[in-house]
Length: 131
Image (cartoon, rainbow, N blue to C red; front, side, top):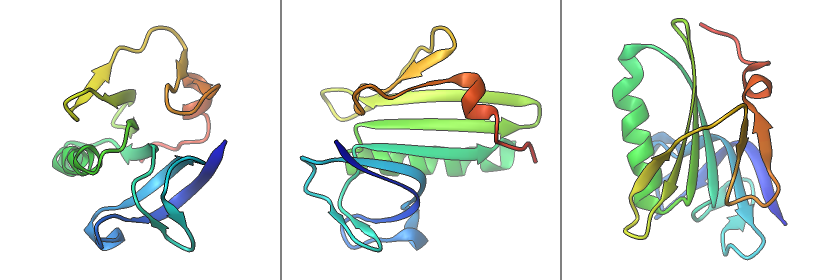
């Protein structure tokens, strides 16, 4: 089906982790021409970002989201915890290459990019510690 990794350094257009390309989780389908070595070279199909929620990071969250969007990552899951909040936001690229935030209805969240991959919100937050 594909390759999954966590805390993976993704190299896109010659830019690496120091430039914001380290994700908490990433998936690349078998059909994806991404090169999987110690680092991933190319654009993943799905990325997970986990953030400790505080207002000082809002610009960094937006900046990184825009980088994944510009790179063409089809689906981005953002999980924010802390400051009393537990938020999951799912973004998918539209036909113009712009992320659209999707409504999350109910406890179960499913990916359109990873066939058969669904998670309950409670399971996502179960092992995350608020800062």
